[in-house]
Length: 287
Image 1 (spheres, one colour):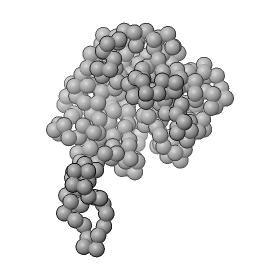
Image 2 (cartoon, helix red, strand yellow):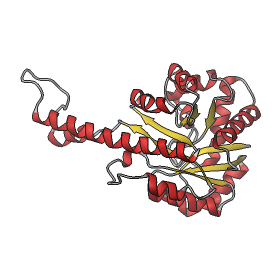
Image 3 (spheres, one colour):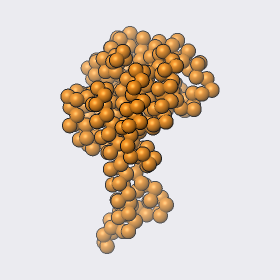
């Protein structure tokens, strides 16, 4: 028995064969699926799916890259959606600096945004720096609102972090003892993972552990204590080997678990039991 702790079942990728996707998941031993919201509308769809399917649960939130969608207050609509007993966490929320506005400025104007010249910063550099700062501030506002809402509702949080490690940890620190978080799609170092665990939080691993260039992530999964991590696919993204280049789906959670089990020298059953127990404790399905 496995729990797919991070899927995007509301995405159109699954519309053509939704029932078959659920059937294959069940055949693979994936008995529960968490579908994760990335916007208010996505979160609403997640709740609708969870209310229609007994084995699907909803996590509601606004992804950091939605910071430019023009929504300043996410607490009210998310609070309303959280009335459903099928909502078991807030997320995915966090910080993502992977594609800052400055990258677009550099491409559009054919300049190296952060290059320094003898004359100092160019006009383009100043403009890009301002845009980046404003974008990060909007992300931080959305993140803080969702952390506050999680505390208010007594829910835990699914964290998205990309190229924003220090700021994410800094923003999360004041919430110690008030909530727990899982860093989904963890791709950091062992030291970073241990920092997360030291704060009382968890990590979760995806199909990256099966990639040729994912050995460092697999090594982290092999070292962490059982009970400190969960498994997921982040489908439809990050399809594991041997499905690279295809749509990922919840059934592939088994491949993630099998890969981690092999790296640790334990059985699939042991990984299934411990990650399921960890997910059950963290998400509290019957709230």
